[in-house]
Image (tube, rainbow, N blue to C red; front, side, top):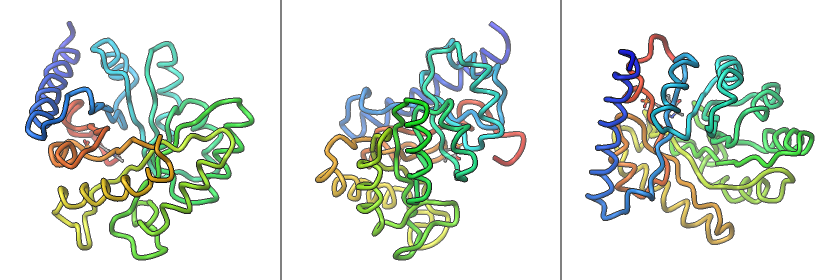
Length: 239
Ligand SMILES: *Cc1c(COP(=O)(O)O)cnc(C)c1O
C-alpha cells in the first residue's frame, strides 16, 4: 500500500468507527447511515483510492473541479453527489456525471435540471438544500431554500420530468438562531423531512453532518453524512 492509501484507510476506519458509535448511541442500525466522502480539492487519484477501499459515494461542490475528476474516474463504481451552489449555466456539465444533486434551491434550477435530464435520458436524484438561517421566502447565504419554501419546491421537483425527489439536505448554519447548535439544527431538518414525507413518502434521504458534527446528525436521524476533512485531511485551499 502507498503511504497515501494507508493514510486514507486509517482515516476511513476512524470515521467508520465514529459512525458506528453514533448509530449505537442512537439505537439505530449502522446500515441506516450512508457515508459520502467529499473529495473537493483532492485529486482523482484519491478518488480511485477511496473506491479501492470500498467507498461508493463521493461528493463535489464545484463543477470546474468535479467534471474532469468524474471523467477520470468514470470506470469506477461510484455515485457522484453535487453539493455546491449550482448556476444554471453549469447544469449541462453537472448532469453529465452527477447521480444526485443535493443543492436544489430554486425553481429556475429545477427547470434547467429537468430539461437536461430529459435531453440526456437520465433520471436525476434531487435533494432540496434547506437554509435553516434564511428568513421567510429568503435564501441562505450559502444557498438553500428557507423552510417555508420546501413544500412548493418539493412539489415542483416531484412533478418535473427526469427528476426524482429524494429528500432534504442542510449545512449547519454558522449564524442566526442555530449557530453552534448543530443538534437542534439537524432535529429541525428531521421535522421538516417528516413533514414533506407526508406528501412525498419516497423522499427519505436526510443529508446532514460533516467531519465536525456527524455524531449530532446521526443522533438526529440523518441517513447520509458528508465527510471531507476527516477522511482526506485538511484541504490545501478553501473549497
Ligand atoms: C466541504 C463540504 C462538506 C465536508 O466538510 P468537512 O468539514 O470537510 O467534512 C460537506 N458538505 C458540503 C456541502 C461541503 O461543501
